[in-house]
Each structure stands twice: as structure tokens, then as C-alpha cells.
Image 1 (cartoon, rainbow, N blue to C red):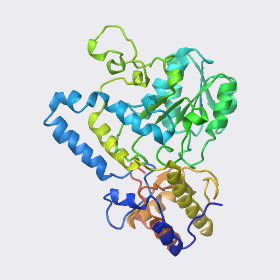
Image 2 (cartoon, rainbow, N blue to C red):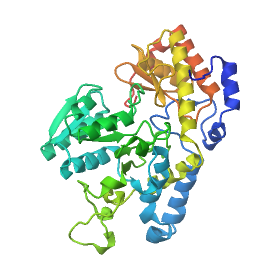
Image 3 (cartoon, helix red, strand yellow):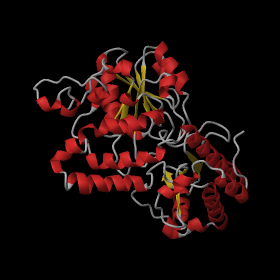
Image 4 (tube, rainbow, N blue to C red):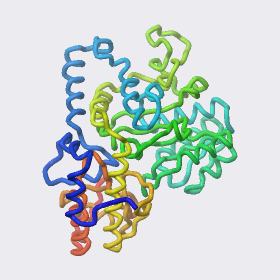
Length: 408
């Protein structure tokens, strides 16, 4: 069973031997704040802010348009993708940064249907992240492809008849982790394809997509990668599948010769063919700087710490009589854990007032994000103490905690 703290003293001892402990100093978080929302928006690393400032003040303000060459802006999406690649276990030239998760799902799933290598069937599960469902539903209409809205956790059964399944590697509500290798075997047997959504996995799990046989994936960069609000998404296509695919949104910077300004489209040789328009340089520069934190890290250390923090939370939830739908202690899990509470929103607001930031997902889920770069074991232990006190005192019943804000 995974070792996790069972007392505050245990937590302090684990902090002393934590191989990631030094990285907490890379963030300028307010004193007294416990940030359990890294699964939604990662905090700002100094390295991200430094690179963003350099891109804005030196490269843009002084270098102006010449920075496309002198600062190598033109290759920034590919260079940034190459830094993400080892975090998901693939080759550097198989990842590019571009657009958003929503747009990248559209481009990648659509290109797979267009290629005609599998049945014209688009599959997404009920309960999948809403964007994934919306995109696939509309894409099926545009491509005249069969849409299958599978029951939750039934997508692979449907895929056994062929098609393209869009599936989150980590469930955004519970933190449940998919067995990628087994799923990819199902896809191969059916001559189907899976587009993995890595949004809740990259930067917190030990991912080995190439070894597991995964060929296609998208992900966001503003959660555990700490790229900043609105940071661009990324897209992965295995090198052996790239040349058979053409983006549904071909753009000039995905062209083999963008500055030839040719009337007809010829895709670039690699994954950069999925770039459409001009990249968002400033947000990509912020992301590039944020990735400094991962240099030299073992992704296995990230996953181990996230699991230990999660196990500690689950043990305390059980003591408090709280129900969690997250994988049990010792089971594979993403970087967040969830609890159900009929007045979960009010509880989350009461925690916020005490400097413990969580988030809420309808109808009754409080999520605690356990970013291994940002948090100490003792911080999380003390946050759980605050949760216990709020529940015991019923301070969450205060009317001010009942008023819903637009963003939960």
C-alpha cells in the first residue's frame, strides 16, 4: 500500500524527504494560502512570468516584427511541444503547441474520420468533459458520421465495432485513470482510434504514451503545467500516423512553405501541419518558461507524491464520514480527489474564506487538486483540519456562503 501521512508529524517528516520540495519556492503564492486548485488553473511560476516579461518587453516592444526570426517565434510552438513531449512519453517532434483543447479535438478527430481508415463513427461517453461532447456532436453532423453517445465507461465497448473515441485519460470529476495500454489494444483489434484528452494527466502522472501504443492525444497547459490562464493547448500524433492525416482546419502556418503564400495547401511534413493560424506568442512564451520547472524531474516522482497526497485526503474523508467517488487508497488516480456533499458549494466557499482554495462541480462535488510541485504534505494536512472544523461547526451554513458566483 502507498505510504502516506497519518498525522501532522508524518506530514512534516515526508516534507523533509520530498524530492520535489524545493520547487515550492518557484511560486509566489500569498502567505497563508493553500492552493488546491492546480487541477483547474496552475499558479504562476516565476520562470513563466520572467519569460513572459522578456517576450513582451524585449522581443515584442524592442524586437518588433523581427522577433519572428531573432527570437525564433516562428518555431516557438514546436520548441514548446518538444518540452512537453517527455512529460507524456513521446518523441520531441511528435508534439506541437497550438489552439485550444476544443479546437484540437475537432481537428484531430475530424482528420481521422476524413482519412477513412476506420468506420465513420464518432464516439464520446455521457459524463465526459462537456467540451469533448459538444465538439464531437457537431463534428458528426459536419462529417455525416454516426454519433454514438455511449454510456459512461462504455466507450471502449462501442469502439470494438470501429470508429474514433474521444476519451479523457483522467476523469475530470473523480480522478479515475484509464488503462491506456489495454484501451489501445481494443482500438487496434477494431481498426479504430482513440484521441486521448490529457488535460488532467499531463504534469501529474507518469505517462508513457508511445510505450502504451497511444497514437493521438490533445491536452491543455494551464493546469499542472502552469502555463497561465488561456495558455494554448497541445496536440500529439505519432510519427507513423502523421502523413496520412490532413487537418480539418488547414492554415497558413501549417503549410509546408508558409511564406511562399501559395494558393493551394500542402501540409508540412510533421505534426506542425495541425497548426492553423498565427500562434499566441505571449501565452506560449509564458508556458515555455513554466516548463523550466520540469527540467530534470522524474514524472514518477510527480505521480507518487500526488498519490500520497490523495491517499491522505481519502483517509481523512473516511474519518469524517464523507463520501468520495475517487479511486480508493492505493489505486491509480489523477491529481485530484473529490467528495460529495449536499451543500458542497457552501462548504467550498467556507474553505475559501479560510485560505483553502478548492473548486466545486455540479451537482454536489468538491474537488481538491493536489499539484505535487506546489503543495507540501503539511499544507494539505492542515487544509483537511480546516475542512473538519467547518463540517463540525457547520459554519458553512452562514448565508454569505450560499450565494453562487459565476465561476465555481
